[in-house]
Length: 83
Image 1 (cartoon, one colour):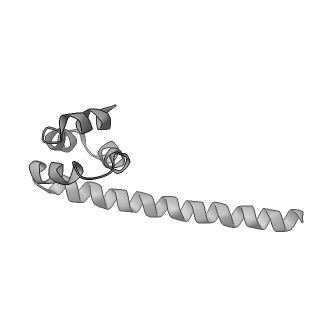
Image 2 (image 1 turned 60 degrees about the horizontal axis):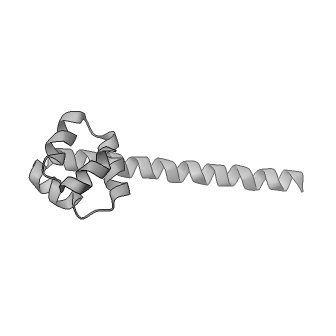
């Protein structure tokens, strides 16, 4: 049972690594996409998205791009993203 359990743990770990890599790739694509948009247009989308997703995007974004977009994001949401 010890070896079988080890295989299950290793597979789960590999799956978790795969999921984490896919998540990072998705976030990096979103960062590039929003950074290349006009700040006001990007902010309109950010205003409609889940705060957790917006946070992850802004966490990876360059400060200059993030600040330009945040200037157009609803005040309450911009404050939550910045916390």
